[in-house]
Image 1: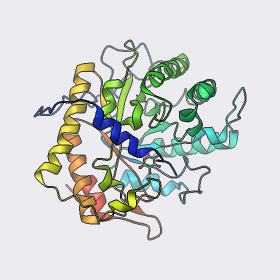
Image 2: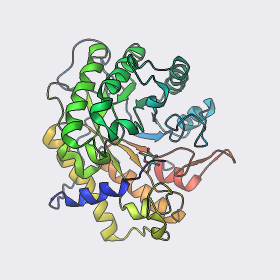
Image 3: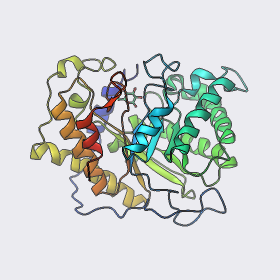
Image 4: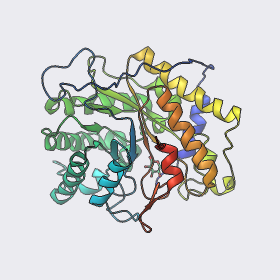
Amino acid sequence: MPGEERLTRRASAAAICWSTIFLGGALTAMLLLSPSELGTGQPQVAPKIPRPMWRGVNLGNALEAPYEGAWGVILREEYFRLIREVGFDTVRIPIRWSAHAEATPPYAIDERFFRRVDWAIDQALKHGLTAIINVHHYDELVADPEGHRERFLALWDQIARRYVDRPGTLLFELLNEPHNRLTAPLWNQLLAQALRVVRQTNPTRWVVIGPADWNHVRSLPTLELPKDDPYILVTFHYYEPFPFTHQGAAWVPGSMAWLGTKWEGRQEEKQAIERDLDFAVLWAQQHDRPLFLGEFGAYSRADLPSRVRWTEFVARQAEARGIPWCYWEFCSGFGIYDPRAQRWREELLRALIPLP
Ligand code: BGC
């Protein structure tokens, strides 16, 4: 499991000097809702996401495990149907391509695995969901960015070619949570190269990119994006306060000591979250980029009332600022769906998607 260095993202985030920012009022939703010409023609000055994507869920612990099933989740057709039925419009599908590709040139991706991903994408699209596929848990890349650069780019070349004919409601996300030796300067170089590779075949597909240091919200200022590419959706992840959301998480050293941490929804707890989201909005306004909260969630070792309060607060605050979101995750340790009982965890589901 990941997260050996998860703590470092908190530490380095705290080191970023920032001032308190209150924006009041929502960010004009840059993703608003018009159909678009994505997939055809030249880049527009102000491109629009092809379909509203406001509320999504991560299909975590399936295709980004060392092999599908290794972490207890095998994707099923009914999951896509259920997700759509309760009102989500988006799924993010994390994928560990690096475990299914050759180690040497041409770094060919295993055809069977490719077919499995085809299936997952097509299920999402068939059920009317926007689909985001990414490169997830490429641990060798973050440990040795230079040594794996060529392979990373070759993976994107293959993925981009494979899905060139899929509609604009398929989005590519270059890399989940760059960290470790993939520092901000190296990541900024690498993302530009990967984007160039994708653009050779997919000139106007939306590409999701987040900052180094685990896609942390406070790391947004380190992100440098190619200025001439308007089809970039900027992502960040939100797990603050980390000792609350990751208490008892086996992959986070020291997190057992956090067990029992609650989130009561007190004023200062709420304000800390509002400040972080306002920070993201200000960055987005200054850089004229749309935002996407690609992961947030609280692990199941926290008490349920706290999880429900926190989840609802983050989701509503993101929405109030025009930031679409994807909850982490569907049916595993953070899950909103209980796959054994084949039932939604109603309180968490309603925290995300309130009844009308
Ligand atoms: C990781 C997951 C982890 C989650 C919360 C994700 O980015 O890929 O494995 O459970 O963050 O820590």
